[in-house]
Amino acid sequence: MNEKEVAELRRQLKRDRNNITKVYGCYVNENRSIVSTFSQSLALATDEEADAYLNLLKKSLSGTLGKNLIDIAFSNQQVIGSEEHGLLMKLRETKLEDEELLQKFYDKVISCVSLEENYLILIACNAYDVPYKAKDDTELSDGSEEMFTHILCSIAPVKKSKPGLGYDYNEQHFHTFAGDWLVAPPQIGFLFPAFDDRSTNIYNALCYTKKPDDTALPFIETMFCTDVPKPASEQKTCFEALLSHSLEEECSMEVVQAVHEQLTNLIDMHKENKITEPLQIHADTVTAVLEDCGVSEQHTEAFREQFDAEFGEGEAVSPKNIIDDKHFDVTLPEVTIRVKPQARDLVQTKTIDGIKYIMIRAEDSVEVNGVSIHFDDEKV
Image (cartoon, rainbow, N blue to C red; front, side, top):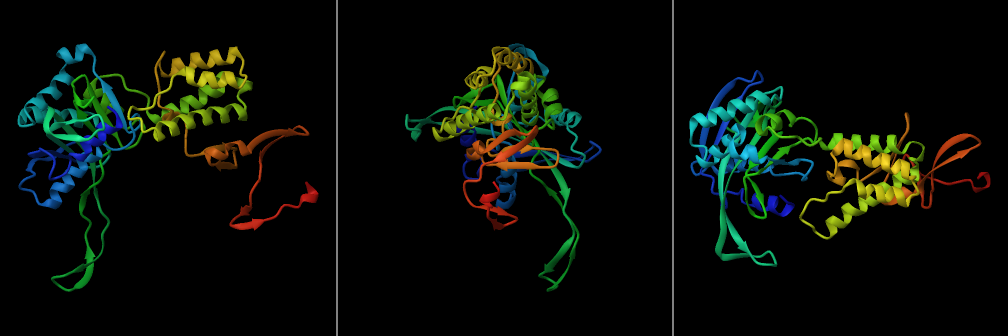
């Protein structure tokens, strides 16, 4: 799925646009025991309640593709006859109205989700009448392409708010109110099937994780039984390590600056050109930068081999997952220097009289703790 397709589905999660008749939920305590289950008609819910349910579901379609939104691919064998894919298909076909299937789904989620606090499993089935679109992306009202029937799930912590001072209108005075149990934004969620090329794709799903770490790994492994890509934070750590280890003594400030600049430029161009498909790069992208910097063939080949070993031979990664395109950091044990990406070239390394220095070219005014300072040119 691309960004436009995700945004299109998000827009449908409003009271006046969705075709969700009921939302279903399972309230689980910190001991993984079911407290209660429920079904709620959105037509009979108050506007505030309906909006709250829809907003929770919408959160499971938020964030960055490849980081918060992870593409899940099922194998042909799974689609033909696996238990995990079969359960999702049956839930979709029955529109969640089969209580036995729904209970089986809840039990499976509980077996692999541990948030160390109470949580809510919220699930709904929506039928989106996909409209035709002209070449300029305008929707046409004289027909539709297909009915995209899908299930959307959000798994959200339920936390007790802190007691506080409040005003009681009936008694007309202030007093302390006990904390209430409130549903927080979801930590994990998913969409099934995927909405690829604005059409149903039962070979894929889209999994949401609020934090791009390993929080969702047990959930993905249990619910989808498929290979899990490295979390974004782990991809970044792996890339930094393999760049350093593979280049060895040729891993200089200039080389790291060039790699960061190239990947940042690719991210910026992708955004400026409004390309909907997620940006992906291969080992060749970085290898070309290393060659331009004069890195030896021995070390560029070592980088390529280690890249394929970490991420899979021929596999692509999102550059947003392996660099911080908003900052360029230089870190020492006791000092961290943070500059904007466009100013990365102001930072240099030099060895003077056998001592290593990090030097920052000061072209404009300089402030220290908010105080403008001047340089004594005579001592330079």
